Picture (cartoon, one colour):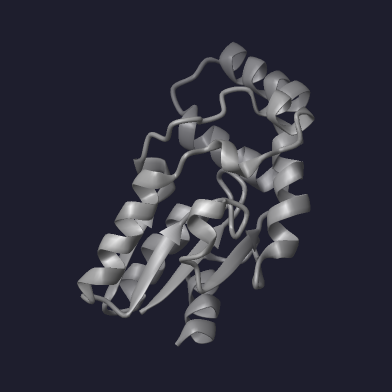
Length: 174
């Protein structure tokens, strides 16, 4: 069984791509980072970056246990992780066989996040969110591009359609 990690910035297409791969490839199981609550989760990403961007502050033991459970079950050929950190977290890196980074331009990721998360928000709420992004959050997105992108095994163009991104990944892993 191969463990494949799909990384990207927030709203970069990780979940959508993982779900598309699961539709196109048989004998696959998936785990999604956002389905977990982790000890040590970062609330202030701006300060996290200023403090050195330590990806090990997250205690990913619950995810590691589920990876082992799936691996030990022998019930699939591929475990696809919707997982942002590539090889940067010590608890998880030892389980990963290959990492794909979806390189989505930050303006596209920002637009997707607003469309996804703020559909019922007021103009003022969106404006405040954008100001927060510029002042505090963007630094973490840029940090991921500095760390995660170059440490990944493959970089996929995040401007392609979900189907094309999934096809490119499947062509490489199969």
